Each structure stands twice: as C-alpha cells, then as structure tokens.
Image 1: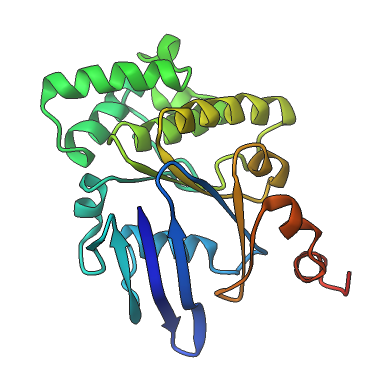
Image 2: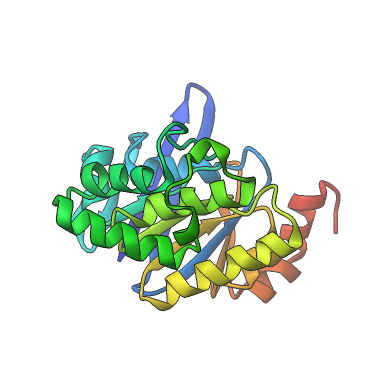
Length: 237
C-alpha cells in the first residue's frame, strides 16, 4: 500500500532520514522503534507531507504522492495521530470529529454524521460525545486523537506514540481499541516507546537510529538483536 524509495532529508549537516526504503503491505501492522532523535516522527512528517524529502519518492498504492500537500494525502487515505493531543478544546468531542470528517475527509454532512457516530463507538467515546474536549482525561484525549484520525476514513493509520503517559491499565484499553481498528482492515504504522503495547499489535518491527533503518523483521527476533539492545542501552549489550 505504501512505499518509500531512497527517501532522504537533512537540515543543514543534520541528517534526519538517510536513504529510507520501507514498504507497508495491505492490512499489515508495522511497528517503528528507536531512541529519541532517531528520526521516527520526521518519517511520519515525510509520509504525510508536512516535510518534503530532499531525495527519493513516496508511493501510495502505486501513485507518486511525493509532491502532494498534506490535505490531499489525507483525502487519499493517510490518517495520522500526533504525540501531543491538541484537540479544539472549546468544541465537543463530536464537533472535533466532525471537523476531521468534513474538512480532513471531505465528506458531506450526512456522511460525516454517520462516520463520526461509528468512530465514537469504535473508540469508546460514545458516552462523552457532548463533553468539551478540554475537559477530557489523558486517556480520553488520546482516544480523541485516535478518533480524529479515524474520522477521515483512512486506509493507512499512522500512530505517533499514542500510548505515551498512560498507565498499564489504560494501555491495555488502548491496545484493544487499536486491535479492533486493525481487524477492520485498516493498515497501521505505529511509532511507540511503550514497546510491550506495540508488540501486542504489530507483526513486523523496524528500528531507526540517526535517520537510518538498522534492523527490521519479526518483532521477537528484532528485540533480541544485540545491535538493537546496544542502541537502546547506550553500551554494548
């Protein structure tokens, strides 16, 4: 569904993506890990059009989207959550989803109402639809961030550290929600530092360090790699 071919990006002498070759199969759940500053969020910014690569191409279902702006990529099927949820705090939960569906997804009002209702149910926010977004707990703000991405009707969902800051019990709730979303056929790329949450969902793991892919494969094998352990611990494993 998604291909990155030799994608590179630098800010002056600082290389944040170095010849990244990456693919995502239809229906796959792919995890991405790496230390802070490895280039994980930059990779999402490149995929979603918030940054333009210096070199390389990005293909969505065979279509070159390298030059498309973010809003066109969103309507082409890319949905994204952000590390820090920033909803429209004075709007209700339902109104936040409506903005995503109407403007992000380009839907009619009737379509938006239906999609928002389905998304509220899927993310466990039905009972809080009329609450002001600014009054939500951290877990529900994370759910809302996930729901806003889903309200655009993506075929590929990009999750950026959505489990960060949650308790183990809250993580479990979020994992079950993400599993339900994946079961509906939505492909997922998930960046996460809470590795146990990630491993509960993904079938393939990619490790980034200094803008390079240093390992990828079956999650259990990748996590046993001495190179990966050294990257995380900072000393030879």
